[in-house]
Image (tube, rainbow, N blue to C red; front, side, top):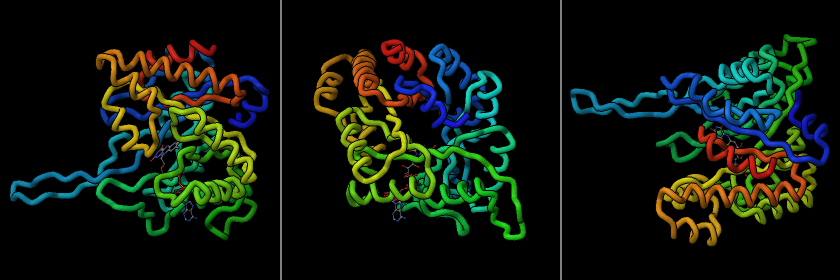
Length: 317
Ligand code: FAD
């Protein structure tokens, strides 16, 4: 079923959904099940599975020279989606990125997903690869998420890349896209970022999932600005709890978001082992306030830590 249909059916109550990362190569599917089994009592209507493109690594050769090799450390997104749907009977939402895909590879991936019974995809651009200083699309790939949204929408109309295909089978994907309450780091300002977000929605995106934030006011302001800009699709808040002291620096560095003073002070005052409790309490309060505000769904970035996520979700269910 489509993500947006779940929101319509829930009418007014707040659903919860989860996001998992494929395990590092060699990790096995059991890692995903171990992290999801304890969360299934919350009846998530859908579970997202992230996509990770190839990375470059440098290996030193006996000659002393370094050899550059491309490897994918976390393959398996589509297989994990199939396993999740089979084991739990819930919808899996694969993330699909522009990076590393030609348009034809994207088309073939979408055909696989359609045949598998996947009804939703989250359409993203992806980040620049490590060692590249900007995002570089494939020679025949997409430069921005909006181009991916347009390709999916074309397939939803039965239009394929090969113009000789007439009366092509129509796919019926519900499309999610990313939104950034604190602006995407490359955007010159929030207004510009919002105009591109609106363009993604105008191109056919059905819902938005936000980057994580730790200050709900940022989300509320973002929703207000979106509505003012004419973006009227559901906007799902994405939450991740703070669990480690080093994240006070790594989260702002990696995700380009601010951490509120009150949270930083509370996490800095306690012993390293107690930071997780500060993070849980903070995320519980965020979840409660978002639920009271009537958000359609809260999307938790689980990072495989089901214990922490359980404690948070239990407080609102
Ligand atoms: P876009 O919407 O294409 O925007 C990228 C930048 O370009 C923005 O600054 C935007 O303002 C600007 N822009 C957009 N359109 C145009 C245009 N036409 N002309 C000029 N500028 C434009 N990454 C992964 O690799 N795998 C994942 O599974 C993954 N999951 C994610 C899930 C969520 C909920 C979020 C919020 C992010 C996720 N990401 C993932 C990270 C994401 O790929 C990066 O943040 C990436 O840098 C931007 O992706 P986007 O889809 O927002 O890009």
